[in-house]
Length: 166
Image (cartoon, rainbow, N blue to C red; front, top):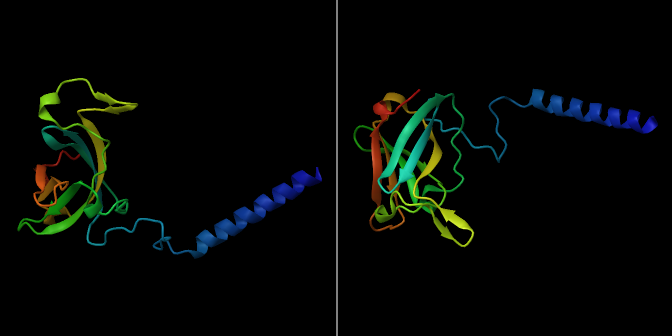
């Protein structure tokens, strides 16, 4: 009985301290581990993309309030990146796309996935990509394969105003 009362008291004290800390922390502050929102964007677009031997296509996009664009890997560390450009072609933002391992060899299209040891390598992959929403300032969204640094390869581009936003 005494042990239960002590445990309940500890829980109450911990919850009170936690709530007090939340009340004194401004809503706009971030811990060092939180992704920092992109200040130039007016929100976020979540795009679901399909990746295969033909390139990268946006299947559907959804506008969200600003969710913060964190970069789990720097764009320079990732072979596949998205690049958002304005009408003049200037880069507004870019970031990594980190899909599952995929075979993009056109001669393997339509075949079953490869099995290498215990790894299954499909010919099509899907990924969700978090993009800053620059609204009318954005003109194109391009996906680029930078695995060969001397010769980046465009895997597809979409006009920003033609995104299939739902």
